[in-house]
Length: 517
Image (cartoon, rainbow, N blue to C red; front, side, top):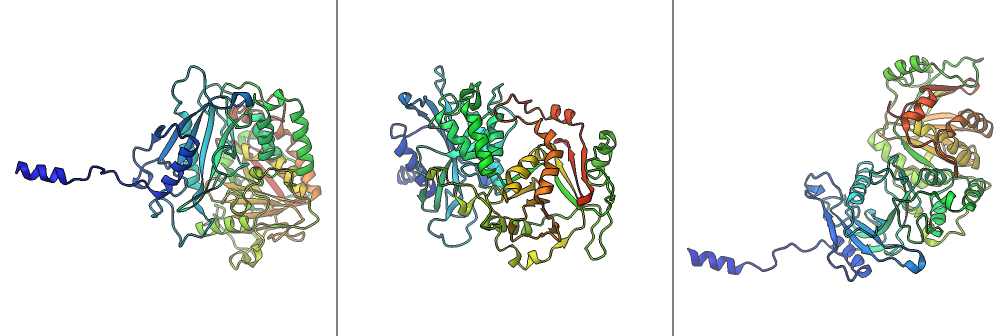
């Protein structure tokens, strides 16, 4: 018996480890090419893999020691690289496989995250908090199916490392050392680098565009430098480091407008309303106490609605966007609403190749695009639209603070802007008259399909709404100014929320509710 067991033991292969998945091997090869002297870097590993029911979508996060290039103002830093947003296995265990792979198609979500943080002289090992941050972003991508692309921003509203740092938000850029596009056996992969930024820099990216702010950060070693290394101890914004940066941003806003064309809103709801008084004032601030009591029951119930006789009706709950409708909206938004040729667009001719956002697959579902759905009216489903007589919208404070940007940075420049509920229930798109392929026109400025509302906002209305919401800008830092901060509670107290703005002649009302509503 003992000899038999020994014989069985001798017959076992020496290498019992399974082969490395081909997608993972391709990523490893790119990392080995960049760091040939670090074949076995420190690595954070998901204890229970995502496909086995674990909570963390990223299988691995490798952490490399990068010496930097001091003579080029690139400091030593830690370089984090994720594995799992792209398809590592190719067998459908994580990422859905719809059919034969088409050359150039994305692997999984088509990207992996990277992050560079300045290495402090006393550090002998990389901190692990960036790995937790990357896992949190990966969870957002998996849950929402919204990809992160170069030029995007992420509002975080707290120090990335949990300290008292001024670095509280993120921009997305192209990793300066890894391949711009890596072809793997399961598709193409891009490396999108996280860049930690201050509130003022985030606000500049929202008002103008992410790539423009990234270029300013690149030229300032004290901000991020050529390789966009995040320094959590940085105390000065790019406007304090370079006085010309403010003028550059303001000129860019005036010339280009904003290329931010949509955000996810914590609270985004709307309802048809036909009860506006003909002689009401253009703006009404409701009592916070009475509104709060009403809004907790129904955020848009303080104005009673009377549905039109020729329109479908619904109960106290507004219509929801179904899963098929959500996918359809994403597809239509990716195709693009077509601005007329006379409408000026963002001039990208002076941008480097690395700054050009991949328009062919720009933000699946996050609506941060220059355009949304050319063949909108060709869809049989979208022909079933509802023309609305009046509309009452409800947004949370953070989303509402983007309204002046949406109006003056987008609609005024002949573009569109979309608010989408983070819960996926509703979407609201503001469009300029020059945008074609929409559900609305001058005779019918408000229309909806399911939970997707479109509003036509002309130049006159842009100015009226912009003036009404100018005080919201006081709650967010102007570029180069001292911010009030990211304290949501303080902002809400200053605003005395909820507040309702009414434009009766346009049969439109907007209620702003607290972010923690």
